[in-house]
Length: 292
Image (cartoon, rainbow, N blue to C red; front, side, top):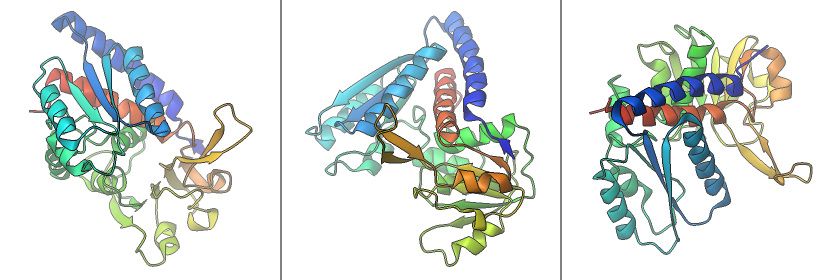
């Protein structure tokens, strides 16, 4: 068993980004600039946004966190997005999900200029991704690709099974692994809550991407010997044994599955750290004007 170490890989890539950001500053006189909009006081969302802002500072980016109360109307939020779209000093723009029920997340996503959509959720970016054209790839799938590339894992010809079909991870991951690229060139099966006999499908996998949001959903009896196991799950449970008051668990039963795997990501310390890297790389490319 080999560990796909998100801590190690993210540190290496962030150092590369830091050097590129310094070169960008020297050339243009400004830093790449990421703006994050947070609506409400969801604890997990506040933690995620704070982490993104902190990582921007570490690599030499400018970052701005705009925090609105839940009482903000959809129209007011869309007006702010339009204002930031027109601001030449803003390179990347993200709106942290989830949003209050009275705000349509699809309208918000589509309102963001696709050239600043560093989350990679805009339909233009998703469509370009499917056609293997220049685009912003959703940060978590992008981070997974960067991790596989770092370890030199050749996925060509492998059978990949993705568990979970969300628009943020599962669906784009299935497209990316099937594309004519490396990592990629896999035969892909996308499973979900309506899939019959998920265990049978997962047992066929050379690569498993677990993104279903259920603690220890993938067990040892679902994994064949030598499989590559990528755990996207972040499931929080209250704990009196940690400073934070909670403990994180993945979608994979790591202790039981790891001995059967050729490569596996831990939780924490795996895909979550790579998601931040994907966002930073997208922001840097947005500053360079790579997507037009």
